[in-house]
Amino acid sequence: MSDQHTQGVASRAARLRKLIDSPGLEFIMEAHNGISARIVEEAGFQGIWASGLALSAQFGVRDNNEASWTQIVEMLEFMTDVTSIPILLDGDTGYGNFNNMRRLVRKLEQRGVAGVCIEDKIFPKTNSFIDGERQPLAEVDEFCGKIKAGKDSQNDPDFCVVARVEALIAGWGLDEAVRRAEAYVEAGADAILIHSKLARPDQIIAFAREWANRAPVVIVPTKYYSTPAEVYRKAGISLVIWANHMIRASISAMQTVAASIAAEHSTINLEDRIAPVVEIFRLQGADELQLAERRYASAAGPATRAVVLAASRGKELAGLTDNRPKVMVPIGGKPLLRRLVDEFKKHGVNDVTVVAGYKSESIDVQGVDIIVNSDYAATGELSSLACAQSSFSDRMVILYGDLLFRGYILRDLLDSPGDIVVVVDSSLATTTKSGSPDYAWCSRADDRSLIDQDVLLEHVGDDTAVRTDEPRGRWIGMLKVQGGGQARLAAALSELRLRADFGALGIPDLLNHLVAGGQPVRVLYVNGHWLDVNLLDDIERAGLFAAGSQ
Image (cartoon, rainbow, N blue to C red; front, side):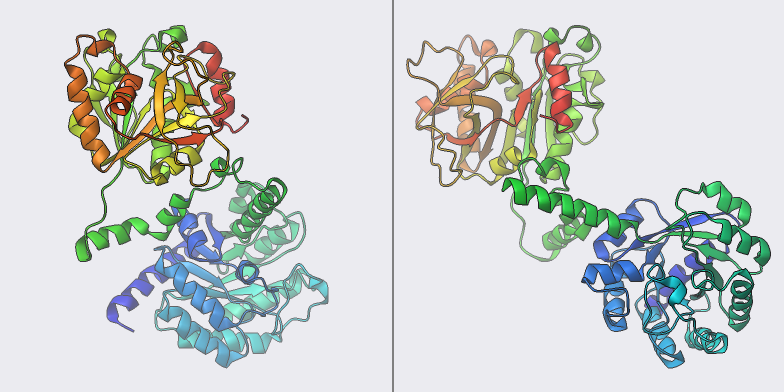
């Protein structure tokens, strides 16, 4: 083992010892694999409990030592690799006799684990809450031998061995619990974990009172979870372990999702309520790999930029925009623009340009570049887009700032082929959409197949006199430009600037100009799942939409 690795182990072990020896009450949380361990650290916990129950459950086996200790140690290596906080392993009975315990401690130290907790039951063990009173306990001398073997085997003086006393679970009473705890501390245990299966902490408090701080006391309030933390503080408890909540939460979530998909044969009503795939990438450290690729491998493809047109006041919203632009109006407690930026981040769009105008100084959203259209009151959307031309990239999404949409729409747009792609709602519903209809005439109707639809835009606008046939849908105010489309878009902007009425033109005029010039504009059909915020009546609908109720 390298000196550098040894120092890393010592650092984690020292931090675990500090938690256990703390004069105040400390808390650690269960994790059972790499991703749950990283979530625990991100939540702010200073330590991780590698639960035997949770580790067994994630393997799909019983908490009866059916997962081998080598499988457990292998999973711990993944957990230590992705975290920096100390891990205390729920080591069951030590996976055998004193010799197994010696080897376990050496292997845990090699993998950066800060400590192990062993319980005074017979190998193979059964979870304490399954017929606990019928489970035999180890002989005190034999268990003390395991503790001594573990302590004698550790290289790091701060590596912690916690002795878990099962006497109360097994129905042997307080006196036996204290007798065993005394013997275990005498054998070298760094702390005592006292366990109880009652719904009240009476046994724990009684033990703590009798124990009188002879060594740190660790508890696991799985059954007596309603007890306030202040009770533990007054009793002199050192460390509280939330022992199985991450695995339990994941099971509930997976059961809900699986049942919904099985019933509906679709994920459309789930996607905005579960973690996006990019959140998995983030937790896996994909950003670090991308940085490494840029340094060591070939250059990555162009990043996607979002251009948000947000210069208008939104006067139809009355007093809501007296002191702020429409994009800063809160929807469900979060400004419209913040919602857009969060959605971009979920899909890996990290470069965001906002073209502001009215009350631009009041825009307070992190992670955006602001460009001001100072002539916003006398010009339209196309002038605002022209203000952002210096920010154009080879791959970008352009959209209105008053949009709310389900995440799959942006995802599908980013994945769509074509140099210029617009999103068209084929439902033509108006009950949840306000403002100008921006009807879209397309080369063919939406057949709802969502597969290989090669549909082109023919015209977009609210002047139905231009076309006598029925529109195929409604442009929602979102498009993607990439590859050669960026140069063609820039050229179209330059051409339209020569028109006397340029200041009054909108994005539909730009799209129509592109189509008239022979530029193919592909259509991505959706069917609802978006709305825009233009009127006071839209605010309530938008709140329901953001909450997933529409």
